[in-house]
Image (tube, rainbow, N blue to C red; front, side, top):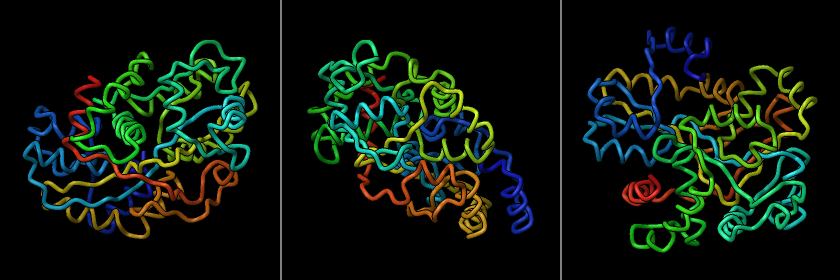
Length: 317
């Protein structure tokens, strides 16, 4: 949606006579699938900095790479579930619509097959579970796999320490059942399914922000009609989903320069909820958005290196 924004299209055209013919592909697919790379794209734009190294592993000739946008990985849930998690020590409220989440503790509870009642949510049946996208096809699942491995290892996991946690990460993902290939599809399913179908899902912070800003009245209708209110839980620590633009052809070097201008960065934040290259943001102007997001996300852990991540997602395949 960001690169299709009429304001972004206009800036690219007037500043640098750039018109984009962009095609959608999964972040992992675009950096390693020969069928896509053999189409000789001028640039790649995955959703994780670690995937720049994956592109190099697959012999992509990178002229330049630059993080353009950032969005932290978050957990989307519902107010009744979040209040239960807070009451049992898994989360703490930062307001009615946002919480800080002890994700390491929650992952251990999932591995121990604890019930929702054990987590302070007595009106839900069965054992607690989370859902993410497929880590071999979608970046949010890929990022969540790396974050989970880090938290279970107690440090940034490496090739040397992966064997100690990979089975537990695999168990968490196996417990999820079906995992969609699209983060956008998962977020739409979350909003449509409600707390019964989608109690805890992994996503990007900007997804909610963009959805609200696109149609605030639609969001207010959702809040009014839903049996439970949407909330964001910020894992502590989390990982940032950085969006590095990889210039493969010289023309893309100019594209990077324009996207890094203050004008475009302000559009990215004010209309689409993307924080800047350093993960910072200004205070949201929209009152609804302001109630949901944390002004600063300070507890951030690096992703494992690409070789460790490739071994991990191969285990999860």
